[in-house]
Length: 348
Image (cartoon, rainbow, N blue to C red; front, side, top):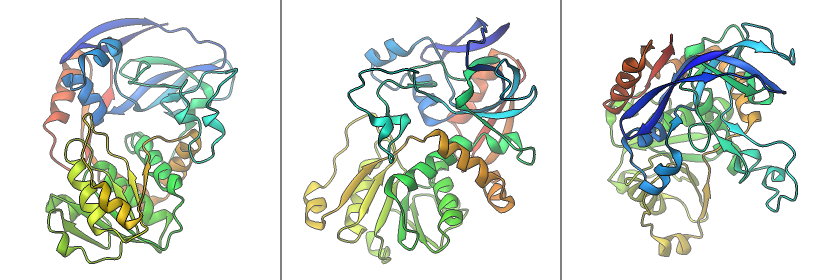
């Protein structure tokens, strides 16, 4: 089977490839239906990483948030035309003499295995017509879930893993710094998984903050306004601004509180370690989810109200019929200032 494939070969340049799709043992062939572009994809598109790293990455298929349709499954796990979420993290089979044993640490799991491959990072992503993919990395999508909304399963799974990583009790006052898509999804997930928690969202854009289903929100920059007794805080900002967000959290959070870092910064950021020590704070890092988190994400999406809240992030659908459309999709996402994502519909 042959399929079209768009690979990034250098900053702001995609080339069209023709892939020979071979269904290996334990795999199924999936037709990619919908996908979305995340900030990591945009960094590769812009070449916003060091040249040495990019030299190892190019050429590569981008996109790791995708859903598709089964077209071939020799294992008979799925039926033809079944809809699935593709879990982007692949752990090799039969690892021997692994010194890390990360997979056996419950709060981390297989996605932190140093031998794992992650789509659109060190493994080809989903910007292609067909993909042969491990059966264990495919999560079925019930018929009542629209595929466009299911495209957010990866980010929902990350939000679930972020909560699991810290083991929330559910009665805390929780601060979320960041008014982007991840911050919004985390807020929604907490609302449905921990109904007794109070959520405070801190961001820079009032128009976005008003869309959050939170108890209250604040504009970042005036720490005197934040009077809540926040004991758990999530940094969902990333980039250069993450330094400001982390230090604002350190100033606002209660002594003995916990800070979970989820934003990615390409450069080192400065944080106030003196105050972290004075207040006895704990810092966690969490951006990766497990297959079980994806399954929980799909379960949450079966809730009509939850699905309705996630649907608010859907911006326009962009039809991908050729490589020009693919360029246009990336340029549209680059200029996107709204709270939400463009969804790519593959018609290659």
